[in-house]
Image 1 (cartoon, rainbow, N blue to C red):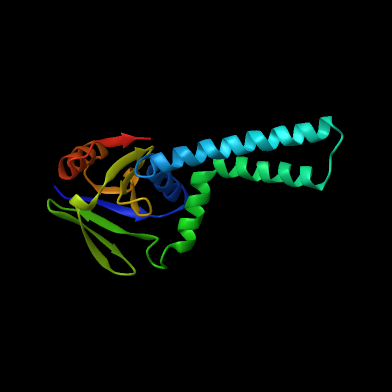
Image 2 (cartoon, helix red, strand yellow; image 1 turned 120 degrees about the vertical axis):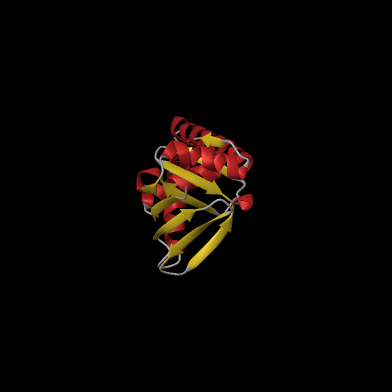
Length: 172
């Protein structure tokens, strides 16, 4: 059986893709960055509190508080921000297409062109909600909406992909 998807790279799909990359191939780097970010935020908050308590409140304190708030927002909405960046970098015409999965490969057809992919190039497979994500590297991934399948069922597709890639699907 050939599986097929009508893929649309909207913000929800791109956010799922960004999270999958962060939780798989980018996991170690992301973890270190998050720890460092939260440490810097705690230090900034301590600086602001100390400035207020010692009545030394000034422009530096306001700047530090603002920087800490921006860092908190970036850490909380990291996947959404990465999805926004990905949407800006996406080639015009590649935001939607049809992908068909065969025994030896899968083919993506968009307004830009047709591309054939081999299963062995996939480094990780992740599932988030209705999305399944193929991660190729820290910067490259593909996402498919299981609700947009035109052939087969999500359960059959997951078994098929695990067999073809030799990878277990990571739930994120």
